[in-house]
Length: 98
Image (cartoon, rainbow, N blue to C red):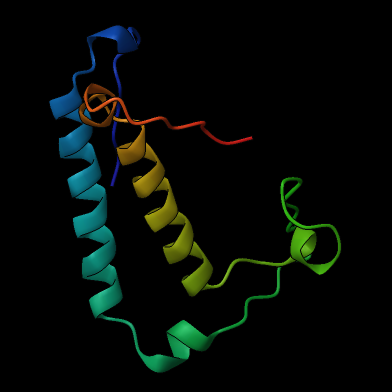
């Protein structure tokens, strides 16, 4: 799946983002439906893995499992929704991420 945003992102609308998000989630769900247990429990080995924002130690150099990717996709969608104009209209406070 390839998405190209315009050079001037000020023209990107909430509806554009909603459409992209839905397409991304639909694609991920389609791929997940084809997974077998072995795909979900697979522990990848990636000697180049490095996440400077992760907990120091083993997490900084751990390759991401399928479960880890799903958790991040879900959390990112939730964070984006929490910072959406709809939420702001209800005077909800969202501090953002560090």
